[in-house]
Amino acid sequence: MDGLGNLIAKVYPGTSAEDRAMLLTQAHWGRAVPASVARNAMPVRLQHGVLTVHTATAAWANTLQFEAESLLEKLNARRPTAHVKRLDFRVGRLPPMPLPPNPDAAPVEVTPAAELPEDVAKELALIRNDNVRESVAQAIAIGLGSARPKPRDDDGGNKGKPTRD
Image (tube, rainbow, N blue to C red; front, side, top):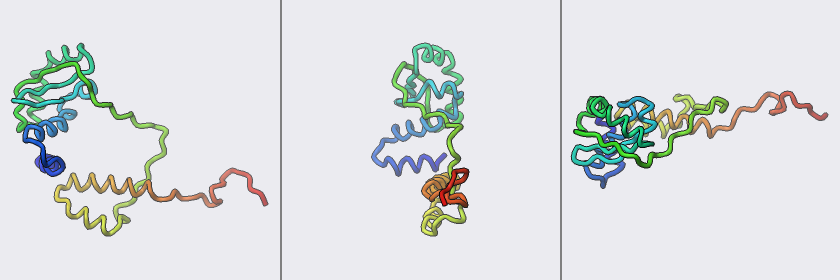
């Protein structure tokens, strides 16, 4: 994921190499560990090869300490350049979890790629990394789609409602 490393260096230009390694490690953590672990444990510091991970409870810290070797192997397989030598689990503050998707929410309207404004398409073409370009294009398409006025029904939005003559 060199593309992500380069992007982090551009977005956070004043950060140290260790801080950038920590940001990359956090990005890989959720993919390297089971979902239940990702919901209850989050890396917060990488220093001298020791990754400090905050957990939701003491029970999680204790359980993960027993699984530390396996988790370390999975993390280093996913992010070998982080050089994590040891995991240190401690009870600590976790970031808020995103809300689960609302199944009753109306579907998001997306602007088709062919309908993106020309200036947006030109800027997208400048993004070298295919994955990043596709993600940015999707975000723009959703943003532009939700900004468009919703189509009205043929009867002016009064479908099923009585009208006055």
